[in-house]
Image (cartoon, rainbow, N blue to C red):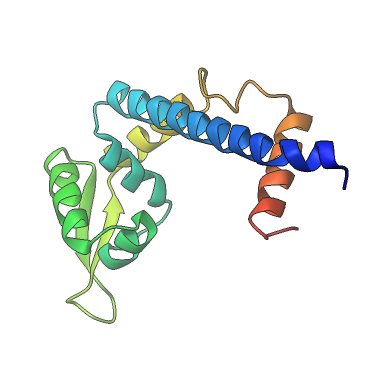
Length: 145
């Protein structure tokens, strides 16, 4: 490795980190704006994104990396708006499964459609650039395919 390259590597890494934080901030802002346009909070939108099938409250908490008590509050608000129902688990009635209602499925579809519209930073990239970024991120995370 050349001396010149070694001297600029920390600066380059620092710039990459700054750019990643900026990208994450833009993605969060887009996510929050999409949720608001659908009349729900970002926490409710995050929960709905995980509900591609009936899911236990514990699994939802795990997927959202939050305490189960937080999922209870999110679920209460979603249930009050007719977006989700709680059903007893098939093998253990103490386990509550969350199931999207028809209104919840329709709202989830609208949310996903909004998320795929601009100004989401990644949507504007070409398919080739998206695939390159995906591959780089997977390699960076040690999950090469």
